[in-house]
Length: 113
Image (cartoon, rainbow, N blue to C red; front, side):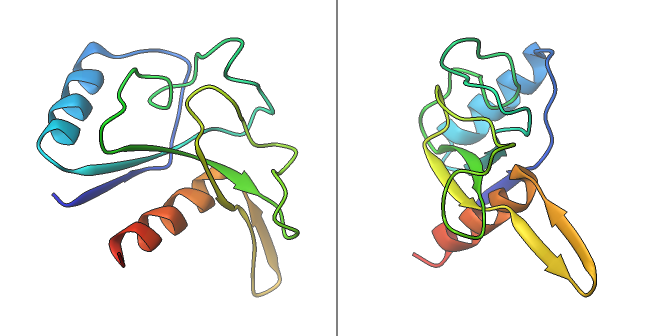
């Protein structure tokens, strides 16, 4: 694939998941992952996966901003989080928020380049 969006996260590592992501990024696939929504500084304790896997090539860890463009209070930051995109959205009368909404925005921007 050209790109992959992973808008989910957990606190457990998976050797199989890591190997698959590493192979994908090494082959040129751009992988976009959510930073998570725990208001954590991942510089201190990077334990959100897949965001904290030590992959740097073609691997985009995306946090969320609010409607003003500032980092959203709920978004994880630091460590591997290098990109931020808007994570707050209204769809009709319903409000959504999270780094999972920011991640595909980053993917779409990168694919247009």
